[in-house]
Length: 293
Length: 305
Image (cartoon, rainbow over all chains, first blue to last red; front, side, top):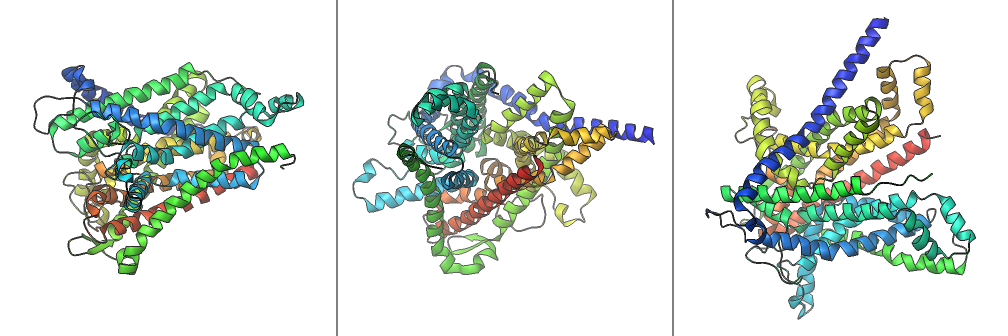
């Protein structure tokens, strides 16, 4: 009797641990193959991979991904501040009035927004642009329905907003009430308490929220499918014109039948992975969390 | 709650942000509805009973993609559940100190990894691997089961898409189950060990205590798989067919949209049909995730004393 229970206990442990190892194997395999394939591309193309235009399907040279890199940079630059501002202030509202009905509604809306398929966001933003261009004469100069960094950013904001809101509200909620109590007893106003006490206490977590939102924006593909414009024949110069993004380039090239495009896609994937790793390590190692009691 | 005049002003100054969130959601759903009406009124329910994409003759039926979406998501959530529960138990019960921190960081890393990276890996490595080690043997040994009845030709299929999606949702499901599992008050655990149970018996009891949270995690993972695009498009093979076989190429709603939307404006109803399909997916996904988060909140208020 006793023995059987012990055997069962050990058997269970072995099964669970091996399944857990199996669950993590894909990640390691993925990292290894992305590095192997990506490095072979990057080493062959060299520095040009960052400054050249993408290759034509039958070309011998690998070319580069400069338009997509700059496009991703532009898209992130335009959508991140808006996302952060909207997410942060909504989170402040909800954490300051936790019992109000508005907070409950906002929480529900954020959850719903997070579960809207990102490709649906892309479709809606696209058709809104078409509608606006058709109904407002002269706006075509600013709002190209063929896609632009502006439209892409708009889609990215909608996609990333619920995530940044969730991050911010989780961190703001973690501030113990005693801190606020102390500040109020000194006669500080509500804004002052938030700006000088609450946000200061979780300053580093705020940075985490910003970085994770950024990672989300940089890696988003489906939201840009019909909004960004996939401009790869040159470097984008304006946010009103069409742009490309690293994830979009990878997506198109990996679906194509051309070997040279596959290789370019691997290189771009490695760049994206390295960017993401960098952000993640800053978050994990650089930002040491202060324990609040 | 709101007492002084200044408090009220403060509250009001923040409401625009809440309203912007609400209006974005309403706008999304409204546009989806508006665009769907055209084809819904033209085709009615026949849209959901056929599997055909023939814009030249104006004949559409999206039964295939809708079923494909559901089947893919079911395979996906099964896969991720098989790995998530052991991963949760490992992190919560068997690992301590630094190792525990490292493993949960790895899970977090997987969770935030851009889906396009999974997509590239899945389409180049996972699908061929699945074809030669899972699909071919299954077809060879059990061809009489309808699910495995067709020969996997390229490997790009509903099955491959489901597994690939499942692997990418493992960290998401794990994080939900883990949070619930670790939130079970310690008294339950103490009670288990107090009556002399082994670790296995204790885990069994604790898992059964967190069952509603696990159900919620399953629903949330399912809802997330419904709308996922990138991974599915590169693994499912993109073909408008309706077959019980899992090894044949197929479509999900999002894969259909991703591959047809760019040219859909050329035909009268094509765009609208795509909007109908994505509208259904969106509504389904929203309702499921709201229901699941309600489950979690209820469970937490009951179990945490």
